[in-house]
Each structure stands twice: as C-alpha cells, then as structure tokens.
Length: 330
Image (cartoon, rainbow, N blue to C red):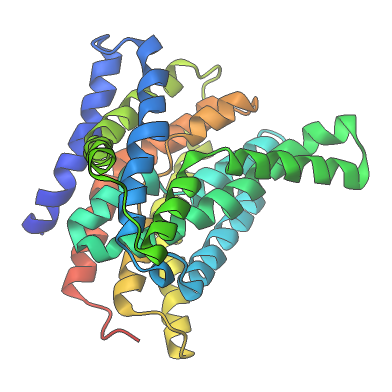
C-alpha cells in the first residue's frame, strides 16, 4: 500500500495545491481559464500525441476495450438518469449528473497517473477510454441536456437532430482526439517530428501532468464560486458514489464476462480500464454545465466530492488489484 500511496499522493496533492492557491487568491480567478486553455490546447495534446506516437495503433483502438468500457459507461448514464430525474433535477441537470458519473478525469489526471502506476503500456487502454468518452458518452449526455432547449425551437426529429449535431460538433472541436489521431498516424507510418519540433512537443508534454493537476484544483474552486444555489448532499453524494464505486465495478464485471466469452481482453488491459473508471469525475464538465445553463452548483459538488474521496477509493482499489491480480492475459 505504501508503494501505491507513493504514486497517488503527489497527484492528489497537486490538485489540493491548485484548490488552495485559487481559494487564497495566490492564483487570480481570471487566470484560471488561461491555465485551463494552456493544458487543453497545448500541453495535454502534446502528451497524448507522444503516447499515441509510441503506442501500436491496435492498442489505441482495441475494439474489445472500447466495447467493454462503453457498455459500462452507457449503463451508468442510464442508471444515473433513472435514479436522479425528478421535479428538483430536470433532464438537463440529470444528463450532466450522468456525465460526471460516467466520465472520469482520464485526460487531466488519468493518463499521467496510470502510466506512473502501471507503466507506459497503460497509455493505449486509457486513450481508448478518452476517445469513447469524448465521442459517445459526452455527446450523448450533452445531446440529452440540449434536447429540452432544442424542442422549444424545433419539434420532433429536428430537435433531436439539432441536439445531436451540436453535441458532435463539440466533440470534434476538442483538440484531444485530433492529437490522438495524429499520434496514431505517426505510429502507423513511422514518421516522427523533426528534432526542434519534437523537443518543443516534449517540453509541452512534460508540463502537462503538473499543470493539469494544479488546474483541476483551481477549476473546482472556481466552479464552487459560481454556484448559484445550495445543493443538499442527497443530490450529489449518491452520484459521486456511483462514479467511484459502481462504475469501476461494472467495468470489472463486464470485462471478466468478456474474458470468459473468449474476447481479446487481457488482464492488464482490464486492470487499466477498471482503474480508469475509478478516477474522479472530469473537472471540465463543470465548465460545460455552466455553458449550457445547468445546475453548476450540483455538478461542481459531485466533482469535488468524487475528487476528494477518490484519493482513498482509487488508492484502495489499486492496492486490491495489486494484491489480487486478475490472472494471465487473454
């Protein structure tokens, strides 16, 4: 357990540093969007490009990995909406709650943390989860959130088409899948950036992990400051529990079932997927909720609760998987 904590503690400590820096005014609130933009548009794409470039394409787009992970994510989305939809939590808020229940912080936290914990081979399965969440999970939940607004302007199929188009456009405007695609292209063709450009990419990639973790804390503080209503714990703690407990349990259960059916899912890949699902909720969902007019206070509290509790739950699961390995690869 001490070896696990030696890896996980610095990651969560950097998140705490960002939160404290923003709360104490050491980091101006006006600087947080710029910090987030640096990570999202420069540092993290370079990190994902380098991992993609050094990972075989079949590991980046493993259909079994994608299938198992997506099945668990869709189950979590459906279950979360069914459990939380109420007069107090309308469809838009329920959809964003489902998104934070199913969308782990794989980009800002998961890639560097899981690579540090399990080695460079973990990059391939983690990148698979990022693609699945960006193109399917987030698009579905944003489309559901937009459905009510779209109905007001265009009835029937036009409303559904408009919501789906807007969600897909949002996924395509995200730089992360394009960075992964360029990395996969470099991996397939064997092409590499020229020396000076490769050095710039490496320097930005090296900055991704610490700056992204620091930014998570700052974004969480900012989201709390912009909350417009008080949210009782019964409206956010159960969703955080779904994220941290049920999501990884579903991934593990579906993965073990796939292995028994003879699917090409190795135990190492299943371990990576399970730990990815156990990560806290993606912090940037609070910015999306704010943009689309959802109850950002509730979303921010779910993310904050899952991030605070994940240090114990994630570390405990990592230790359990180390003490009880899943067996030989399929």
